[in-house]
Length: 494
Image (tube, rainbow, N blue to C red; front, side, top):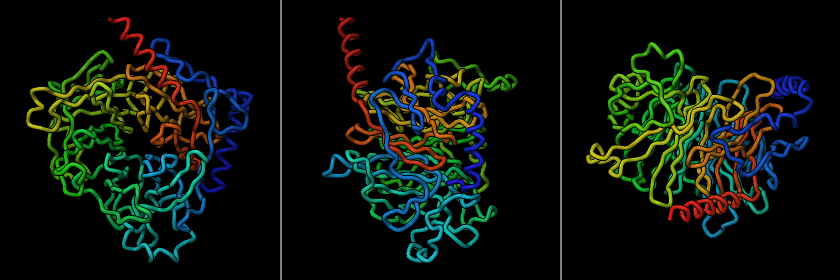
């Protein structure tokens, strides 16, 4: 959480800005449909005065936790909740295990789990990854919650990963764990005891703090998110950089990431070191081309060397070897379609001529990760590029809804007085709609969106001031409508 002084300053400034618009409620209709690729989704948002969220008709929310809450283990709920995943609780379909990142280092005024709890640090010394300035544990890590989503309450909560830095996003694995990604290359020069920039695996069912073991073969870079192809066990990774590569990790043994494997970067065939971000100032870059949503690219992969990256130059070496470049790759999500098609979506948050976002889709080869894939290469397509922030801005964390649509969290810090962060939906054919608006005066980013296993609840975080919420409503209705439309289309084609 921000200090009370800083938080009140920001909230007051926001309130002054909103005053010229009459009320926060007036902002609910600042969003609009894409005139060519828009969808009504669940309907127009309802602007309720004083509500934290504006939602479609029939939907509601509860605040589950906030920064500073005392957890079941006696430690504090840390600031800056970010990426998150929901896992089923065996034998209890009405509960979910939420594993939640906290994007903290130890620099700045933030709440860490051990604040005012220094007397218990020795109890956890073995599991903690690193100390800041040889003193307190680095504040980043994960917390785990057991949520009863019929009652909308927390049954149990505890710290599950400690001493890591800037745990931004990550991804759930099919074997029941969370991959927590460090979005930093910080190390001893910044006051830390060890190098950071790794991925850590946290079993969802762990009932306490797990030992923090970095998955070094998955590379040291500015990690953002991870998605696992449940068919192959290959892990796809994103990097938050203006010259980001898109990565995959082929494990030696599927589901056993600590056993090592190969880290690779994507190459667009016949376009070495492809510059894909569509920035206007890239016109003089010989490797830059204008990308449209009608294009499909064939892909190859190159092995990366020295992936522990002591010099922080992994990206430079990858691009020199031909890897494609994207602008700020953040969220990534895996989808398995009813026809067997596998898809990996990833967000390029700063892509496009207005630098407000692109969404890409990667279609794996039928022989993905094998020596046969060059004969039947994977394909890549930019499925959406936004040119209007009222439609979509700064696409960040991604999730796949139970009915197959992509759920997109916005992470914008635009200073315009009418700027709001939204949760958007995107259909498989690239049509956008709006699910929720953040009406809190501090207007923090949405992050960590994920559905309970039974599909009844959408969990999401608002990073500032540090809230985890549960959104309920007729989620099934859009799935039913999509199936009916598919049946009509199939009937018409007969």
